[in-house]
Amino acid sequence: MQNLFDLSLEELKAWFVRQGEPAFRAKQVYDYIYKGCYEVEAMKTLNASARMKLQENFTIALPRIVEKRMSKDGTVKMLLGLEDGNIIETVIMKYHYGYSVCVSCQIGCKMGCSFCASTKGGMVRNLTAGEILGQVLAAGQLVGERISHVVCMGSGEPLDNFEEVMKFLALVNAKEGLNLSHRNITVSTCGLVDKIYELADKKLQITLAISLHAVTDESRKKIMPIANKYSIHEILNSVKYYMNATGRRVTFEYALVRGSNDTEADAHALADLLRSLKTHVNLIPVNTIKEMLYLPSSDESITRFQKILLDHGVEATVRREMGSDIDAACGQLRRSYLEKI
Ligand code: SF4
Image (cartoon, rainbow, N blue to C red; front, side, top):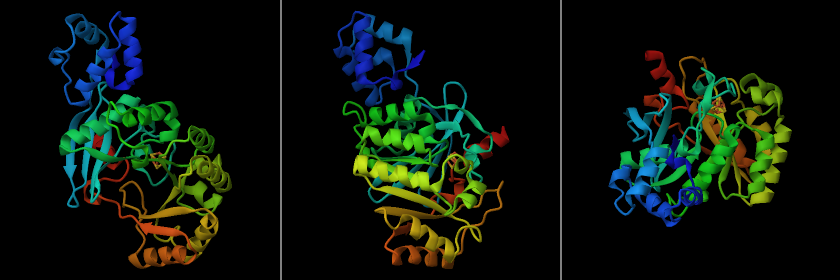
């Protein structure tokens, strides 16, 4: 059976019409499920035949919380169980402007980035749009407040699950649903150039974030296998196209690893790459992950690196990984959990 959260209002209307029911039933159902009513029997404004047809054809499946951990900084990491028994992870972060949820778009990941726990067991499957949306809904229920921002930066490469992620972006933005502005949504990619062009042509007002993490193709190939397919030059060309097509700024993520990519020469090279773009760099001291030997850069190196970028006119901020005391980096908690069972 299909998950009702996978359907747009228009799809649900069309389904009701095919069932010989009026299209407005769809809006009635939407009102119920987005207000947290998941029992078809409780949908009293529907007639008995519409309720029966719904029950026969759909599940209303929100992921269930299998485990949750709260960090000292207020970050909450949830392990969520899906209907087929798979486990995904979702992180809720509290900022001064509200709650932001970091959602997974795939179960595992096939991109093979060497610093990432999500990819260690390979990719299991893509998530559906409804399963990605379900993470936002589950997070909202847990904190008891509206979620104001979403980042697609959890497990998986969002642009490798392009169709479902595009559908999720439409669902989460729908005014009859969560009505979340695209400007409050960030989609991250390790640099799938062909998909960046495709995304640009959709002209969405989301923020695109590129995980760069290295300043030469050779050094990038050592940590990100996708660099064997697309060069940094090709990524930057696609980013320029994206910025022109959407009018949106693109951010670059750069995880600082001690003694690896955090030298003054690296900072100068990064500034040279990005100076001509109106962009923003997030410098992220890596979390120590037990399968990997990476160590975060020293505070002194981080400050020096940031200063070089700023001196060259490249906006840069340091983003501390939130929830590092609860395995909050991408894929860590899920991996710890799977190792235990
Ligand atoms: S960093 Fe992102 S793209 Fe790379 S392996 Fe992890 S989840 Fe996949």
